[in-house]
Image 1 (spheres, one colour):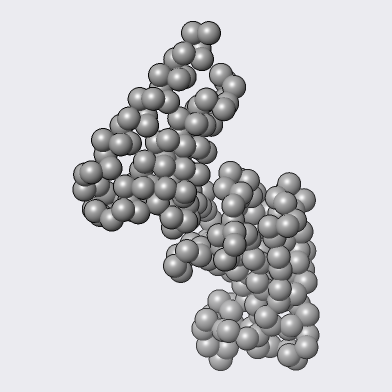
Image 2 (cartoon, one colour):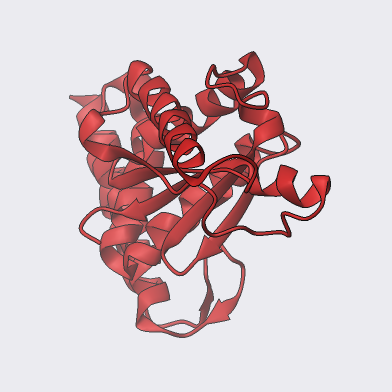
Length: 225
């Protein structure tokens, strides 16, 4: 009874704090920028309320985790999907720091650029141990934020025939996607496609440029978009 009472008091306190904050100019809780938009206030209100609900709906030992996940979900509902992607971006940057994988934000989408040196040897389709370690970090975040799709896209350089490169990129993208689903990310959230040598990000006239073009991108998009 005492545990339930304390949880209920926490819930009331957090929601009350959210209502007091709604009239203030506040920073975006994830970017640090000062904003007075309804979305910012809504995200904070939603985050606090979601944290309270997460506490109430979790077992005693899991209340800390329940509060964190509830806060992220509440922020998404209260302030728009951008906030939900903000927290994922921050977590991905933390998990992928110093791995060689870049994290880029494009609107509500997050792009993870995995160069070939991280994923596959030249002309190979077997994931390296380094790649699996990186993907384990991506999976960790993907499981926590399960309202996001993961679109895996493979690219090659221009060496070889168009048909060979297209096939190679398709197989590589599929390997990455299958590894993530093997780690218990729902298959309904993961898709893969190969783009071959199209959409180069550097010149194919140099080895350095070709190395940059050989890559796998994981594009995280909000559900429903």
